[in-house]
Image (cartoon, rainbow, N blue to C red; front, top):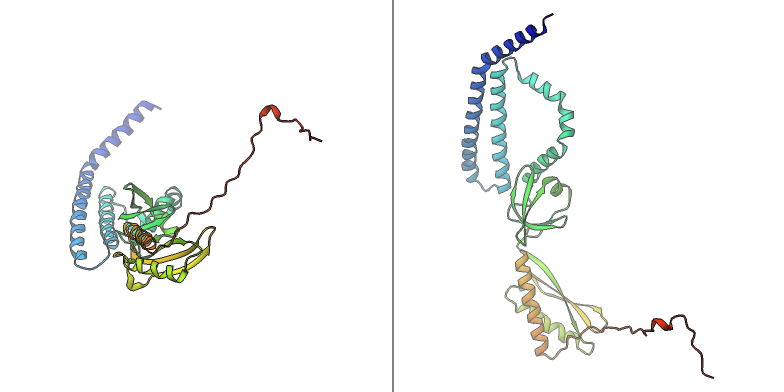
Length: 292
């Protein structure tokens, strides 16, 4: 058997088949280009239609993504049929079914984040612009995709969080409502009339502009501390982290000024010091003799 001649004939057949398929490849590439153009225009049309509604931003992103994905699936299938005329939808699904198990194991994390992203976008809660806290990450949601969510930390850094983390773990939404309740502890000396001190603290907190006095201010005598009787002070203010810090700053300043004006002492906590005798190293191990 002439192996060289056989190899030459096979290479010639392959090259002839490749040349014969060039028109089909060119048409399929043209279909891919047309698919890309149609997908862009379809997303713009979707934005125009959905933009007239009051739908959430995350849901708008989901609609755009599904429109783009559907058009690309149809376009790639048509391009594949042009290259392989015998390809049908049934044969394509059968081929996908054979490799589904292997693909599922290989891309398990990707599929998990993908479906988690769809479910997160369908949620009514955790919208773009909310400040959230999850697994030690606190920040503002800037963007939600099918695979990941972009969270801008309060210090300015951008954190890219896989959607599976936000879906499987509890997420605390700090800005779900416009107001939040804040706490502070204030201690007064033991010789203070507690009713009088509570009234002064209440008036001071209600006088702060950032405090929502209409929702009430709570003053509770909480604990007998080492050097003071402690009050737990609760009030409502804006839900954003900066609003909370600003209101707490003003509340503490107002309480301090009012207690000083009323002559009520905010005592320092008692500090217990333990003194130890220092023994020179040269005297270690020696026994002391008692004087008779």
